[in-house]
Image (tube, rainbow, N blue to C red; front, side, top):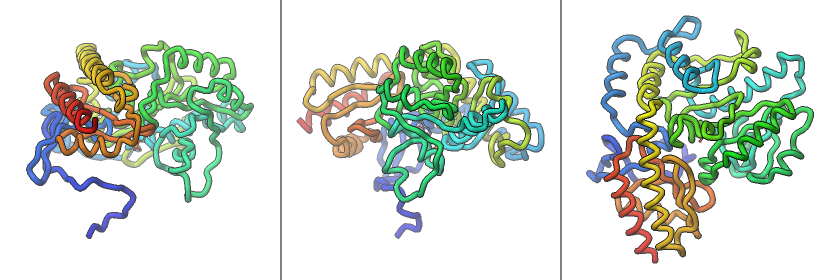
Amino acid sequence: MSYLAKNYKRKKISFKHGKGSYLFSTDGKKYLDMVSGIAVNSLGHAHPKLVKTIRYQSNKLWHVSNAFQIPEGEKLAKKLCKKTFADYVIFQNSGAEATEAAIKVARRYFYSIGKPNKTRILCIKNSFHGRTLATIFASGSKKMTEGFGHVGGFDHFTFGDHESLKRKITKNTAAIMVETIMGEGGIKVIPDWCLKELRKLCDKKKILLILDEVQCGISRSGDFFAFEKSKVKPDIVPIAKGIGGGFPIGAVLMNKKVAVGMIPGTHGSTFGGNPLAMAIGNTVMDIVSTKKFLDQVKKSSKYFFSNLNKLKEKYPNIIKDIRGRGLLIGIQLHTDQTNFIKKLMHNRLLTIRAAENVVRILPPLNVKKNEIDTAIKIIEKVCSQIK
Ligand SMILES: *Cc1c(COP(=O)(O)O)cnc(C)c1O
């Protein structure tokens, strides 16, 4: 009997330890892990540099209040700003906290310039921005909000429906918030031309653009941020998942225009930006943000996609589409993916579902070519079994 509440439908498997792209179960089996804790273990399991960092910092200092200066956080914030569009950072502990903070930053900006009624956030229906009360209503999914009352302030448009998007902008709209690549929603990429149009639309309507890169950011797409290729500059970007490499870290990045609203007392977090988390974030950042690392992600991605597309051609009755970018990959099936994922797992490959019958593949960003080969072989085997 488990004393954990039943809010997860867990698979009957647990792990003892992990190394690189592999997880070792308590019953002695070795699994190729292409879930990576849902895009979290960006450098795989037990990466030597992360282990070293956590050992070093845990001997020095874990936590101090944000009432004091935290040099490790200053350092990470500087790295994030130098690397991206951002001028300022607020650290949090999770993705949902980061997206909530993004919403607060947007509303507070308009408040601070004398437009307190501009509070509404326009989001994509059935997107995913986290599980706090506000962010479930931002996500606009019935499944997530059912039974949780109501939190107002969010409007929704349908993915790809540009007319409804324009129609839904009112005088009280503060921002449009979208995932650059929808993760939970089925690995749906917003094309670069759309991002450009979004930016133009926001400029025209004098509203803010929030790009949620909690899942697709931190080099997952092959660029540090998934929007970089489009040359678009958002105003606010929440991040989390990959930046901690397995340690809980969230953050909201913003430009200096919108940062004016965030004066002392407007936002805070007891744990956010603690020295231990920041030390780890710095190490992850130093590794994953280099051009060499990103080139390798792009190379792995190209290899993965070309092989998956071959499988799609070979098994057109099973595979409907190969989606995604970088190492955020979706195999869309024609029918429900549950059985497919189970069969992959029986063959020692771990993957996870996303909406629209998608089998989501999220290898560590430093995945090796032979590990991709292994994954492809297993996926092919399962396709042939189903056929
Ligand atoms: C996972 C996710 C979140 C929420 O992150 P948590 O750490 O689970 O709170 C928010 N936005 C996107 C796009 C995500 O994928």
